[in-house]
Image (cartoon, rainbow, N blue to C red; front, side, top):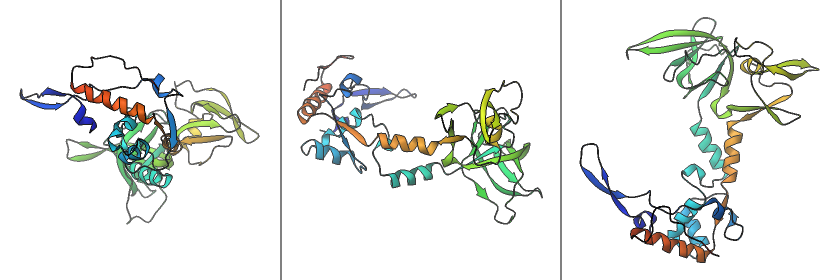
Length: 302
């Protein structure tokens, strides 16, 4: 039995007044957290890489490929990114998805009101020539940084040193107008995007706006930035925004680490017993009738 074919049909009204027949995806079976966390009803099995969910269903439920809907619902797989994949495949997909660049202004000033998605960013050398650039995808107001979709290089400019960031905005879909010029600071790959800052010894997350003082080569937090002025030298944000790649006494938790941890968590798939799977599949087939009402609870027994 195909999952979507088992769901009841409904009529969908289009804006122009016409209607079409469609599948009522809102009428389905939803598993409670109590059931999904039950040690008697649920077992887990590690899968490093899954090409097709139907193949897992075939292997785990007595050669029934149609029980794939159980795996999807029980494991809350709502996108292909949540299907177990090998680390090499994960890394390839991740790098393809996050292949942009991140630019920081040197002093961590707040430019949230001045930089918009769609603006063009150019990294300029001392001779006022552009070397790298791209289109703004996002401005991160927490770390006060510019994320561009993809970085392009002006290969005719052999000078690798850039000192400024110029922000251009398209006016009336005709002309790029220079809006701002910023001192360039840290440049990082979008794939290495910093999400959190931790104190190395305590493994404790700290705010990038923490005011720090250097003690024996390590920066110790002594307070918080008041947000009334531009962050200055004593703040972590000021130092992160600079060109230093590391900060003594701290470590950066990156988006890559975060997504890698998520990918690892998806590898432990949840299953129920084959007998229970057959009963649940039978219950799903009854959705096409008036056997169930909205909010009705099914008791699943082992």
